[in-house]
Length: 162
Image (cartoon, rainbow, N blue to C red; front, side, top):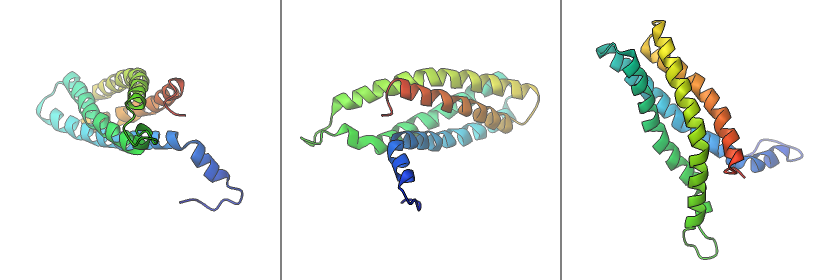
């Protein structure tokens, strides 16, 4: 699928940034799942328990529990051809290990920033007595904006995206 483009600039742009586009698409899809799951659990939890600190921790854990496995699946599906040796048709374990190391390095930094931002902003928002699901969603949006900036910088630094 391509848009009308007389000189092919858009198609060249898509080819050049294909990996970054797919990477961010996977982050958005998996993050959306974690976003809604944590908002729902946060609201349900606060209806039964008044502990805002526990609520903030639970929301963060639920978001990770949904988004990390989903991201891993989507990333592998988009990149599985990179992990096949085209000459022999066998799995290229070295390429897979290299990408896992790069993902770990990029996500380590970005997740620390995300976690601190998400936890602190939700806790602060709960202190001003807004609904738990609203605090969860707003803190998640704030943290995701910061996360996207950091993860894309880290992916370039570790050369995950070519």
